[in-house]
Length: 232
Image (cartoon, rainbow, N blue to C red; front, side):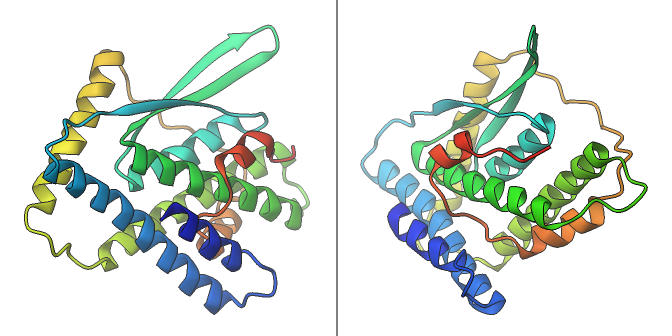
């Protein structure tokens, strides 16, 4: 199923693809990702397999570490996963990683979608010049936050359009899995805190939001996300 998603999104990312075609391909891919996770949940329930929550640590590459972590959080939340941002200061500066918790089918979808969006964000920033009078790093940080906010809005809209699952008991199964994920997070991070709201001085939010609304919601393998960097 995830291979089908990769192929659909590769077509959507083709420069020869029209915006309308890309939107249709992306919508189909997102529906498949959601259905894949639900189908796997129902299969586990039918086979009476005990829910096993996995976790994965994603190391982020500088620059704009917190903005990338926000984008990953947006994708994780959309696909029934939880994410914990971890920060540490080293002699080389700030290091940021994100600890993902979720079932394998859901985490795989998160990695696919985040990898593609990270690449698309990098391309979007390269295409858009920083306006005169703006501090480049501040403008790009706000651009990335706008990009992530638009993606979050699109995920919410796509979820609202998805048809109700036909299988009885689906909502209960998914609720049980979400509870299991929450327990796994609480067990490993019993004292987790919500981060403080950030104040951004750059004026790139609207431009980033527009790019986020145009973005394909998925694409490359997770390995690409580890190699790709948004230029500073």
